[in-house]
Image 1 (cartoon, rainbow, N blue to C red):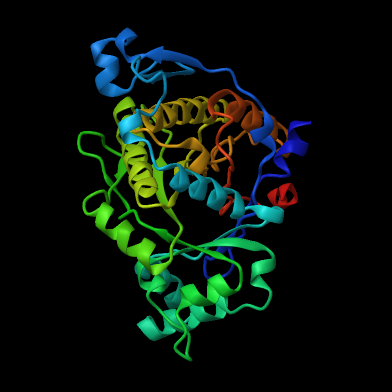
Image 2 (cartoon, rainbow, N blue to C red; image 1 turned 60 degrees about the vertical axis):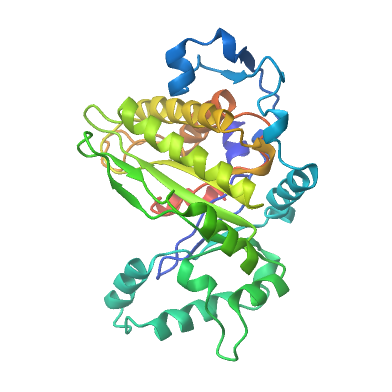
Length: 348
């Protein structure tokens, strides 16, 4: 049963140069999850400061009895627009086209194929993608890079206009990449919050309607640490709040990497803890869950693990984890599947 559920979830297919697609999943969203709500007055001082709430519990202010105070509420029209965008991205089983590889990443792939690593070569490559005939029949949204969102086709038409005319919603990658986390050897935190409000406002004026921020978590000896989980969850939540302030739907991506020899059980435990922490921080930052998209990892063993579970077992573990840790208000879940073995493609 769980395997059937997972088959409706999105999978991303990397092509030779790294661009990948995802097909959305909404099956989990019909499940109503019980949630315990705590008044802020009932939290310990340390819990208020760190967002370390009891599992399954989210805070609200006694004065408002709502996770978002009236003074900080988004305008009703803005909330409706966010919800509409989040749902439209995945209408009719469409998904996201992730063409947000950075210039260094794109150049690296070009070099492997003997392609010149120039601005024009990158532009021409991306033009091939955005002008693909009937692309809008299967793609609901395209995630762009800062250089890409400013580029045009050979006839001078902005990429954004080409996408919109094809019925595809433009999005933008806004994080500055994962950097070493001080005091936590082997762990990283995603940076890019400085100046983000202004950048989001600019992207919104250019026509972007959603954004993406990726946090990477590793499983190893003593990792992920609580400090790493908290730092990345807090950054994701602040990014998401800034996105919604600017009228953009945040794609929240807390990814547990497949690298390593960790077991499926270890991945389950790490993913469960990370998702709970992320959503606690999202509530703390007053993010409207109905106006966001979650982009998580599947629950599966590391690539170097000697015991590789079946597709059905991975499906069962993933669905169980999400039913326990993801609030039902989240309108869409989009999986990253790059790097998975070929036999995983049958889940799509």
